[in-house]
Length: 436
Image (cartoon, rainbow, N blue to C red; front, side, top):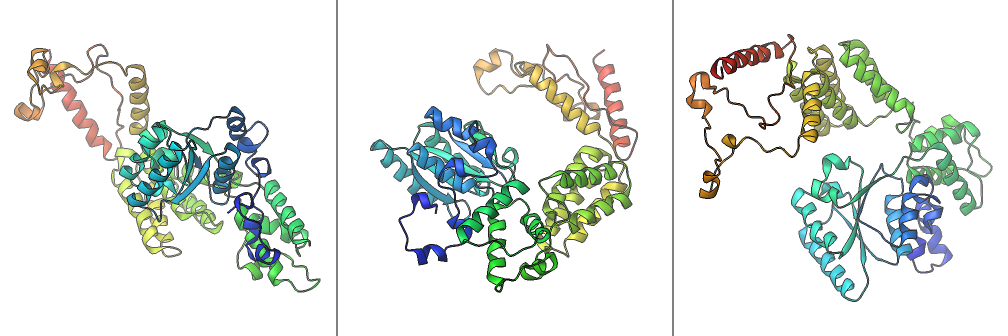
């Protein structure tokens, strides 16, 4: 808990608390590494100044200050603070929190409800937040390390603003170390290279850099100064080859993706192993392989998606290092699979058409008519059940009448899509004959 919300402690109790806890900021202005949110012109600073807070989702990696910022927000806005974790909470816990917030609201005080790991709640649990958000019982602040677009309900996202927390860069981590030295009253016993290595070991995580600093202070004898090799021995951790929040991360994943797209399994394996060696999260690599399967292979080899998902699950089951071989297998499979972006292109074209023609109604003959009124309006008239037609194909038009037929998907003569193309050409021929 932040000192801002804690009672005064005896010095001996304060020193027993972890360094990361003792150095929690007391105000938003003291938060480091998130100036786009908490700086003078930051999004959260402007919200506080306006006197009006809305529900928010904090999205970012661990150790970037999401919990701390939520506490500081409640304090600076004069709100009651409630915190729950989706890992340890269920429906009964949510009901208790909502009841407390309603009682507080009746007495004139609003509640900021901070939900850690909100993406771990299932869809029904996420939906339970909607009524209390809409009637102002709570201001929801959810924290997640996962992409909210994929992990949170659309209804929840539509009622909350997503704010992105960035990994700490070297400057903000250095600032945290300087604050730690001031709090401890002594310098960190590292030479310049080792200090830089410790910052890289933290990998953008503010909590991690302070924990590592504590380990160094505990290990150091009087007047001892560690070099990089000694630092690694003490903390049993190596600095990543690249910072996952910076250019190296994006350069290597880009090189891996383009090697797969270029059907070069050897280069793809090389970059995959570079990323493993750098300490990249293997499940992140698994997710990128799934993306490659649907973007660059698609229906040219439908098994690519199955194999990449299976590899991701195998790693989740086996862990490291055994599970890395499953990801290597998927990497080689997608690199050697026939390539097609036809589905990717079709999806983008259909999405553009959906946005441009989103108000058009489907033709009445393909709509159900569950009531007499709808039957009287012509719903379902003229619909032909394809299974009753020759070749199980009626050739009807399914697009909105004002839109006309469109072609989005154009499969190439490669892989499994060669067979799909033959089917589409056959159906196009039947459609022309039956509608002539």
